[in-house]
Image (cartoon, rainbow, N blue to C red; front, side, top):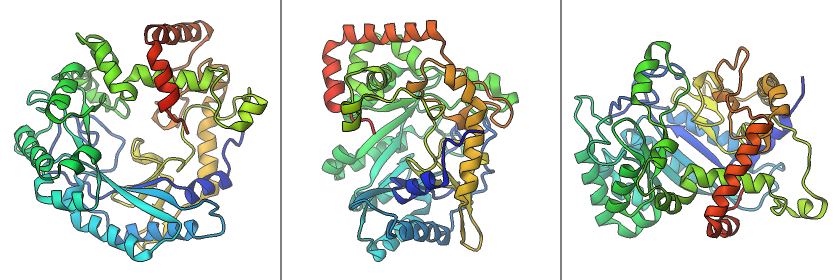
Length: 415
């Protein structure tokens, strides 16, 4: 077995952790019919209307603070994002207040902190002073107009649209500068909405470019696959069917799949793009080392579930937890074991990746492959003919949008 990742690699990522996300509560004041923790899915822990104990948050913060203040930390003062997730995080504001107070009391010299939250906005009117005071980066879940929002219902089955719009408008009116700088929107595309309709509604109402995503198609229960497919709508196909798709794509820029794809293509395959001075002086390394586009564990963030499980992010199934905060508030993170398990998964697709022609631009997370504990097969595998078609399509896009080449090269930073 090849060792793609070592214990020290993971330790280094923890020392330089960019973001920690707390699943504040698994309770929610909505019952969205397509919810990622709903009846379509099977790869999450049971929802029991519980809150994450504040002592577990203190435990993981203490664990990280010790690393940040140790001799291993070589970085200058660095920003860390503290994010709050649910369920609906505003159902447990007391937890959020205590985390912020705890961090302020610690006076960590080589770190400063920014706060963010994903919310359905049902309680936003009540807590807007709090979120504005702490300058939260606020991501509001809104699918668009009343019809598009009709899957986002309360526990009585009532569409949340009217209440949500009322609260968002109140925030915008009360804190206009904060709203302009710190508030963004996330919309889920489905069979009651279209890409263009959602984009138009949010832009016209709030002057914002929404992030429009598909329903998560991983972890679908066998008995719900037909119902899921009846609800699902593909973002790319819906965008291409839009009457003004080219205008919309330009406006959305990197929130559009086409621009993200061509940006990845340029940064991975252009001989004129360099990540650092070593590549400029000595050329790009030819050898492809790590299979898939999977992030190194904790390379971008850490996610703590309401039960204290520790995952590399919130986008993968809870069965892939890499650690635990115990009921005694002890952080259990065996970095050697994490590396071994991560390497074992990567080795399962290693041979596929070695011959895949698009491996350098891969965005496939291994933890979202089907049958990962068995014999996973990557559906994004690309042979030579398919790769040539991919290159041709990216070049055609750039030929049709020559001005956007300069925009990508000047505005986009790839870490």
